[in-house]
Length: 507
Image (cartoon, rainbow, N blue to C red; front, top):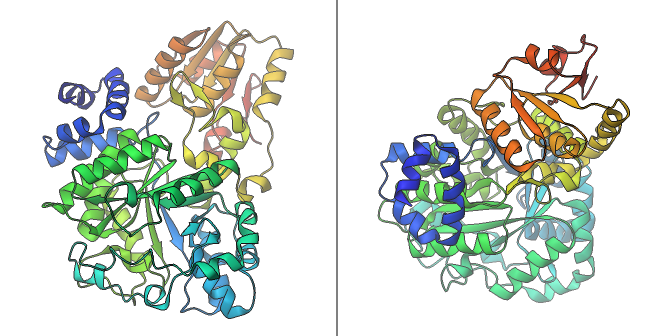
């Protein structure tokens, strides 16, 4: 494992692939090897697995708007505001249920109304066997002693979530099957799989919720804690692999008991970065120093919140600072801007970024993207593509082409030599679809590494000749019967619209 990691750090693509396979077989050995790396090599390794095609290079915030301390008008306005910013929304379903009770409506009816105010993907958690979980007052009005104190697992919160008001949950159990209509993913806690803890639903209930989400075609996120940074962490990662979790969510802060908690948080991020099936690694809670190192180690997503919501203080503050009065979202955005030095997209990702990914997913279609579409053993896209495809944002997008329509046009024109300008996942999907009837595919990408990886991988896994153009778009166009610009970034498509033998995917 250590030799494989060294080869990855030296830039060997096959070693990158091998480390994923070996790591999934034995996560404990992977963690042991990671512990021998310097901080610099650890963060560099995580960053390498954030890159195409094994990772997701998007950086985003998920925002939890809902709080019992807010009026219904403030909550609705929060949904509208976050929609304009283009941030996905995280919702704790117990809070929706409590507010619905206050407002004299049902949990689903309120969620349906709130959902109509945003086009962005919605993730929901605290969802159980009857639907939204319900908790007693001492939990709902938690004063955040755990995060404020910084003491690891000091009694509460370890023993609180099992205190459920199941009689209240059962009242609206008839609405349970309606919730998948208004969300893109359901998140669960896998902490019960890491240690004998009651800070999670029982394992059998958790598995039933995962099954429920899959049955309804929804994504699944899973919260694991850093724990002791060793055996507990390994158990959490194993559970994510075993249950095919789309988004691995890591919690540090009081749930990080390691001797060197910042280093352990980074190791957890890198492990998830390498092994996460859906290529997304998030955090729902941690201290500021953990967050900064985690971002340098390849973290994608941070859950934050509006005032009065617990996620508002759970991300980005140090012990002593994390209080229920905080509005953490602006600080999290600033920390991300400071720590992420370079990105292909705005940091954090905005609405335009979401539209580009949604168009890419809608063009290729459900069967050609994660978790269904692969070239060889590598998924096309990541869980973001899947979640955005099923969102209201995607439904509102008008497309010039679908992949099937493009393929039919290429068949009608008897294209045997096809050029693909851009070598990322859209090119993978097109190449896979046209490989049965084309003889040669030329690929040009301004990024040498992306072009090389794509040419080598497609040539190995598709029955068609694949040739790289060393980033020379003109050579790609001039040596093909017809070329396709494999991007929905407007500035890229604009450069090629005047050429007769080039197809752009949008006007």
